[in-house]
Length: 357
Image (cartoon, rainbow, N blue to C red; front, side):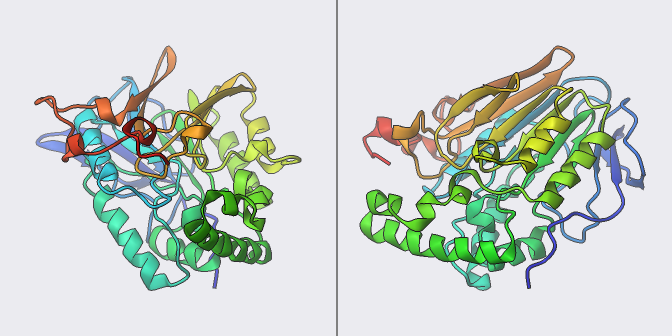
């Protein structure tokens, strides 16, 4: 049976304190936002499972220093071997305090829980190689269908959630938030379309029912999810920046009102939106804010849709605002001048390697 998406439980605060011999994590319950005078990780997921890899933050300075985190992009569409492993090696060189993403972490091309478990085991094992915590976001490959959603719930808990790191708020959305009936229709159409793509190619795929569904391109944000985030925004009114992590660009769906409610709640504060799904890089200014569409970190590339290259994104939040750097993976070298994890033998941008999409 499909499990509830909504996080539950008391807010948890994890101050990160400098201690002799390393970092000491102190856990205490709290009912309000944390004091803005030191590093702190706040969430309200009761567990026992959580949608991140661990909570050993690499916070080098307790106080008012910049917050530095990294993002990676889509892995899916016949994931290209070795790319994500290289990304993990590069992230370990860069030393972000934590790592987030915009979904599509596994292929999700099965309705068998044991097959999906193998795919998630593979991703988890590779993500565990990162020194910093990796926060999970779900995409259509991860969450389209009852079995996929049940497996996610059993392993990671809620499909959408918020967390706060120091004085920065993160909203992790679920853009596959459809009714069970509509989800079944989408899943059936998607299964048929994927088979057509694999046997007949992209032109035949483009003519399928699934390819023309509005949920396929822009996703769905439900009313309950929207209200959850509007409430989280109100309860964290003292943050200096908010980041919205969403797989599909929900704002592009005609007549969409639930993502619009989240935007309205953020209207008087600075925020940035990161999305994925299209697997080509893009940027637009909306409501005077940056809406950034990430490309790939091992996923199938579509150079006809824009710059489609494997990359990481580095974000710095300080008193001057936010700086965002897009780092092409082919240019992140270790001290020997080589790409980590055997990356010198790999292609990171199919259009430039002559491989096509």
